[in-house]
Length: 67
Image (cartoon, rainbow, N blue to C red; front, side):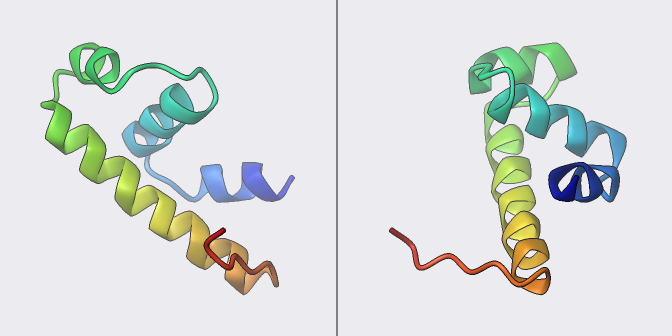
């Protein structure tokens, strides 16, 4: 439920790219081709989305020590 709440807070493209990578395990190049983006754009989107997820989880009381 928590992850669904996070995903629903994202824009459509951002959500689709995140799900392709971390749920379907698609390669960066495959995602880039599917959405017409360069690989660097996909990598940056994923990095920013991971940062948003980290902040979201921290607000929900979860912590991550980097290990």
